[in-house]
Image (cartoon, helix red, strand yellow):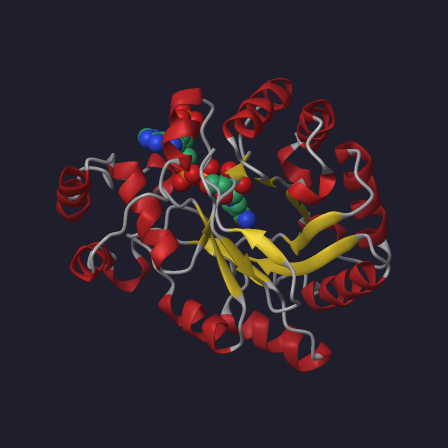
Length: 279
Ligand SMILES: NC(=O)c1ccc[n+]([C@@H]2O[C@H](COP(=O)([O-])OP(=O)(O)OC[C@H]3O[C@@H](n4cnc5c(N)ncnc54)[C@H](OP(=O)(O)O)[C@@H]3O)[C@@H](O)[C@H]2O)c1
């Protein structure tokens, strides 16, 4: 089994730097997919209430026999549940579906600024953490103004910000702001969701050739060397194994810089919704 790097969060808890994301895996296929991932050595699963597949994740965990303290499970609060005591109900429902007493990480999924209640959602997550329902808490898709607002109001700094990040879209303003405050970056869509020709890009292909690795492995390695937490999604066992096999080589500084250079100017490389526009 590969030795997966572990990072320490700003609350002192640890997280495996590479995990398995289950976005768009149909509920009926999720138990099998997560079971395969756990068999291969994945110990960190990233799901969300909106994915509709928390039950499948929970079934695979229960059947695996892996001790709870060897697993890291993240789920997320959906956008229509920021108000009042909705976050309390939402996390309890997620825990029920997952068959767990506590998640390792609970995130506010999107700030949805037009609803203007992400600060309240963050205040509720602090309470849920204090009540022991989530060990660590963080946010997702938060831009710097959203982060500034919740930190200024509560004094509690999120453990992570889970954002779209891949070579074409590197979010340097957020990553620099986060690094200065010891917020870990979780890079979603680490492979660009297959929406542009990342694997054919010259710096990626050249490094793959040099190290005898696949382009996907080179891109994941680029993330790891930048300190990003990643959880690439695949429903194919061979790719699950491939995506895990990234801890036995190191990109050179020049190779990293070459991939850094793939960023598309003015945010043009984004493959999904802008956080200010998703409400
Ligand atoms: N917080 C958020 O708002 C948010 C949004 C999106 C995603 N996420 C999280 O981030 C995780 C990962 O992001 P993502 O699923 O959007 O995108 P991704 O991991 O960048 O890309 C997944 C795509 O890449 C393909 N793929 C995976 N491994 C490959 C390999 N070794 N070689 C070639 N192709 C490969 C998969 O196809 P196959 O399945 O056919 O192999 C799938 O089409 C999600 O599962 C979810 O947990 C969070």
